[in-house]
Length: 214
Image (cartoon, rainbow, N blue to C red; front, top):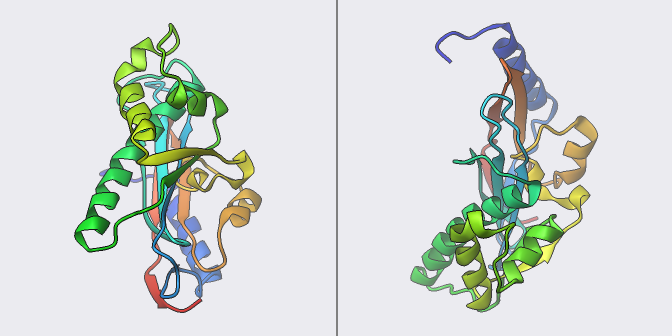
């Protein structure tokens, strides 16, 4: 961003306009929520037109409150959307393990299976398939990690409808209606995807946290 251009300025103005139009929105950490950890993961297949790499994204919830989210370009080019989704599962798994250990250290272990929501049936089937085949041998490392986590009962894979996929918020450039449909009234992510020189730039504005009752 050493050489900002008009497109960057216009994207920044969009963020300011959003904040002006929604001064009461934020991220609510409810005091009466349970301490069950759930996760959503998603990918945007072949997002970058230059490198053809996909985006991985996840959102972590403690009860009904979002506590962690991240978007990152994948290290390698995925050969299919299922592969891209599976790599996003692996990234989400790393965060799930970290948070699970953190809660155990704080005295709040997760006694139930952690649900990882994904909208790709193919990726979910791969995670429960004990056999490798031609489609998965090039992602064997990620396959082992997610499959072992499922077999060790650390997490369970749950299919979610694409229209209810909360991980789309930090991953895809959503329109106004899909964005508002995914946002809970008590919290919001402000994320803009701007295409410059063939690549997507993510401009994120995270609102201040609120602590209180729903």
